[in-house]
Image (cartoon, rainbow, N blue to C red; front, side, top):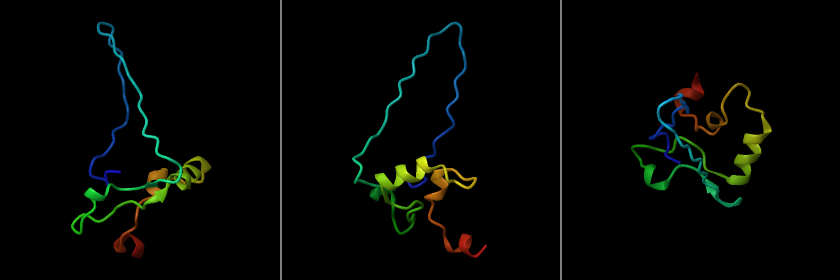
Length: 87
């Protein structure tokens, strides 16, 4: 969604015996026929799309298939530039 501009971090938590902690999970759940991809406002001629736009159904199918061949599913959605294709 952020075209690689905002990177997620690995979730880590530490135990604090002196202070309570509350975590709330939230989810973005678009309809199954909605296109999922970089936000249009973050794709410009200077910063072209880094990830493909696909239907949510295609995303779930690929994510749940387990056929990642050693890569994360997000990596499989990455658009290859000319330099990467030639190497």
